Amino acid sequence: MEIQPLTIVGLSLTAAVVCFFTAMTGSGSGLILVPLLILAGLTPVQAIAIHKFEALWTVVSGIRYWKNKQVLTLDFSWYLFLGSAGTFLGAREIHFISNQTLQIIVGSAIILVALLIMFFHRKHDSTKEIKLWKRIVLIITMFFFGFYEGMYGSGNGFFIAALFFSLIGSNEVKTVGMITVLAAFWNFFAVLTHLTYGSLLLQYALPIGAASMTGAWFGAGYAMKSGKNFVRKIIITLALIGGAVMLFQALGK
View 1 (cartoon, helix red, strand yellow):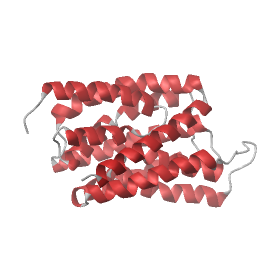
View 2 (cartoon, rainbow, N blue to C red; view 1 turned 135 degrees about the horizontal axis):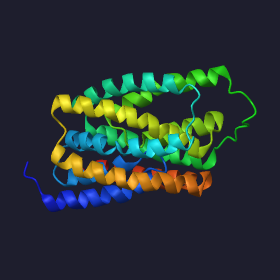
View 3 (tube, one colour; view 1 turned 60 degrees about the vertical axis):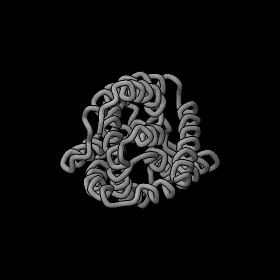
View 4 (cartoon, rainbow, N blue to C red; view 1 turned 45 degrees about the vertical axis):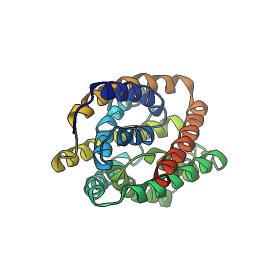
C-alpha cells in the first residue's frame, strides 16, 4: 500500500496522547488506535500487528512501575510463563479469525467489565494471606489472558484488573503495574510472531511506537503521583468508551 506521511504523523501524535492515559490503566490503546489504523486503509491483521508493536510502550511504563516497586509480584513468574505461551498461540490464530466477530464479543465484554469494576470492588486486607485456590485461579487464567493478548489484546488489562479487583481486592496502582510489565513481555512475543507472518508494516509501526513510548513514560509517572482512586476512574472511563467504540465500529459494517 502507498505510504501517507501525513497520516503516519497524525497517527503518531494520536498514539502519544492515547498512551499517556493508557499507561495509567495498563491497557486500552488498541481500542482507539486499531479502529483508526483500519480507517487509514490497513487490513485488520495489519492494524493489530502495528498495535502489538506500539503496545511496546508497556516496556517504558513497566520500567517506571517496577523501579518504584508498584508491581504485584506474588506468582508473577507463573503469570509470565503461562501468559507468554498463550500469547504465541494467540498471535498465530488472529490470522484466521473474523475481526468483526471478535470486536462484537470483546466490545460487549469490556463494557461489562467496566460495570463490574465500578460496582463490585472487594477491599483486600493486606494483613491476610491470599487463599491458595484464588492464587491457582489467577495463575491458570493467565494462559487465556495471554492467548487473547496475542490474538487481539485490546482491553485485556481491563479484564485482568477486574479479576484481581473482584477476587482478591488488589491495589489498583500495583495491579496496573503488574499488568503493564506482563504486557511488555507478551507484546514482544506477539510482535515476533507477526514479523514471521509478514503482517507488521514497520514504516507505520516505528514512528507510532516511538510516540507511544513517549506518552506512556509520562503517563506512568502521573499515575503513580495521582494515586489509586484516580487510576480506577481512568480504567472505568476508558473501558466504557473503548467498548462502545469497538461495538459501534463492528455493528456499523
